[in-house]
Length: 303
Image 1: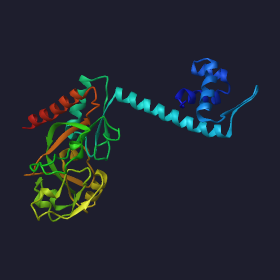
Image 2: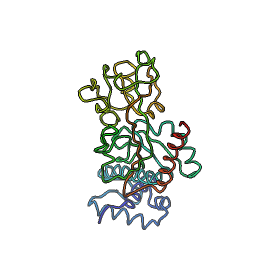
Image 3: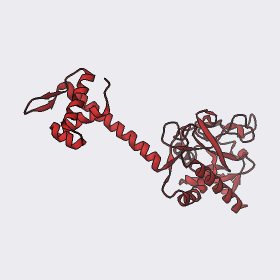
Image 4: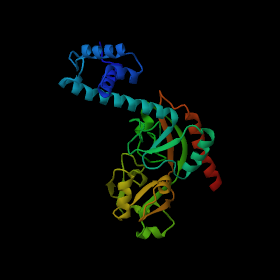
């Protein structure tokens, strides 16, 4: 016989209430059922768990250890149920550096009108899949390229090539340079990538969108590896490096000491949504449609 959750619940209830009768009341079952569950647990584990007399009820030394484990298992089970319930009551969208930038509020307003009973929650996760693979997010925003795409140089995103995930392109974003406010380049309204060549460029190879391919062969600048947007911004604010990123980063991550300037004559960045292929969220079609509309409407209003 295998150990079952009802056995563990009976054990915890008996210890917490002090009697089989009170445990039965708490669990909403008969006293006989409580006794059967305890006996089944002792049989399954092959040890005595409770010391029982007409006046005394207490766990054995081994029972104390089993009780601690039972509490952990029941707590973890409850946590799993909360995760499942949460996934039914909200839609979590993960991102590594920025959500949808200036389009985020437009999407949130549109979402509230279409899905008023399902909150749209944005979750930052500094992982390659922006929280998708570890369950932190139901859908992920990714901004890295497809293999073989030389028109928009960017690291190939494993999320876009992983057969476990399905993806949808929702929009394009411009690139910005990020520089210290006391850097002479901050006096200019727009820049070119060539303007950054003489500086050290901070690049996050794991979750960033920039590669040396943005520069001509043999003309790439010195590279400073970073890990995440906060470290990247800290280096730039200290004038220890410059950076290139999506305009969404500039919108969502203002930082004292950092100036963002639009880059000219560089490929745009593709923005994708990704989700588990075999477990798409129920509201996925609305999310894709409204995300694309948010980008399209903003692009039209600025043209």
